[in-house]
Length: 95
Image (cartoon, rainbow, N blue to C red; front, side):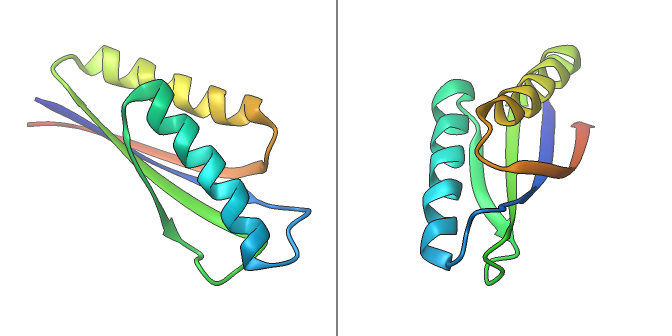
């Protein structure tokens, strides 16, 4: 079993409130869930309205496939143009 985890940190330029941030974050999370069948959640910077951290995980049986899907998630989220990606982290664990 192979588990892939990742964290994406965003800078939200146009958000002036937590309500505006919530709208952008929910949109990103729903697209990630729908396109990749991943477990996704906001995992940090909850009270900062111009910064968001979204974490996700994938499970499979092939390390190369999980690595490829994580790269595709990073590219898809960057291509949305909803927020600027300022940092990404990923880890692949073989059990």
